[in-house]
Amino acid sequence: MDDLDFSANPAPRPEAVARATAQVAAQSPLYQPAVALEFFRVAGTMEEKPSGKPIFSENEKAGGLFAKNARMYLLLEGEIGLMIRNKFFGVVKPGDIFGELAVIAGLPRSATAMAKINCRVLSLGEKQFHAALEKKPEFALMLMSIMVQRLRQSIAKLGTARPTVAPAERSDILDRKALADLQNELAAQEPASFPAGKVIVSAGAVGAFMYVVLEGRVAVSVGDSVVEHVGPGGMFGELALVDRSARAASATAETDSRLLAINRADVINLVKSKPAFGASLLKSIALRMQQLALQVAQLQG
Image (cartoon, rainbow, N blue to C red; front, side, top):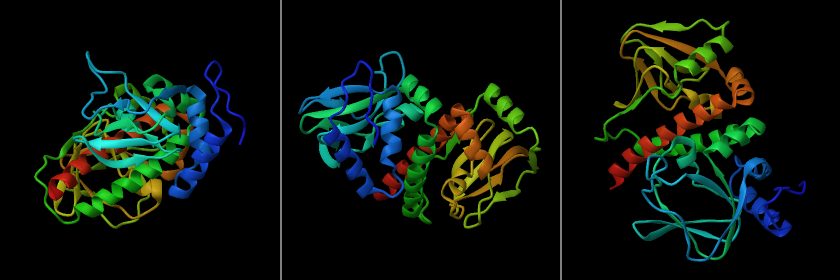
């Protein structure tokens, strides 16, 4: 691997990078350690975290007047303990990325991260994250694959149960300008119209497209339960395109709707050429992960 240059920041020790790479390679076939390290080196800040120091705390907000500026991390050296309600439930090892959902989607921290021993990390804030995506968009594709895998695990746990958590209302992931830009980029693709009550995609089917809602409202269902309502600026159906697996959920037009259908090749091209689209897609997946995690927790709790 190339030597890592962090300009004014101290370079990570070669043995730390080697351990990080080996650790991740052994953990997940989806995770590409070289991609993660290169991504964080683009705009990352090197930080030392002494033993016993919290890196972030459970329920800490990522945005707002009194919120801390959220950061995501790549652990190069040491060990991080994860706690919920002051009870340890997991460990972050060298090479792991953690804390990403607060940066990607502005979500409150779901756990406390504490340095168990002296640690060295690379960190990225929101602006740094977007700057890194401009140069290393392939990181977004890798992270999407991992997040989709987690989503499918949550959907499997949900099964045919009927959670009482209210369905999420999802719109404005893409604002008006972003929607207009996307339509211009895909000018050859005519929007598709679906009357109220029309099934758009069915669980178990092969996924050829993901959809962005231009007008109307769409209900996304797992089994017999509606888990999400998607309005203008929202998107759905991306899971099947990211991992090329069968549809995990069904979608039905609740009102007369106009949708922009995007095939897998166009999604990949957009993520690579339009980092803002990749960031929006990551945010959509992250919010869906949070919603399904809440439903699974309720069923198990």
